[in-house]
Image (cartoon, rainbow, N blue to C red; front, side, top):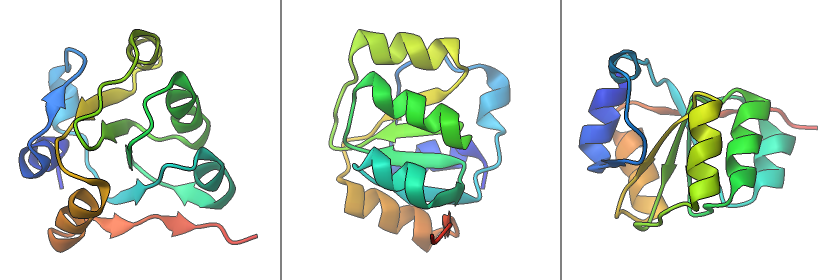
Length: 120
């Protein structure tokens, strides 16, 4: 599914000016998490992270595991430092009013698979 379709389904707001190429990004997997240690410890491959955390550490975690898109749930707005860091690292960030459970469910319903978990 293309990122533009994900944004449509979740009714997102852009937090950065999105480059046209981003709209065509193929989203295959997603992860919903508020514990970045779980993302680091158990994640193997993802394209999109849904989270309620808004601090810069979320962007740093995304960078470490190769996540290209972060969607903040429950209408949360990240700190300016978080937005600036995402922009510098070419990580696309959005916000949705939906809760985490609902956003994950909608993506799953429309064919986005769960992350491949790297069990220790």
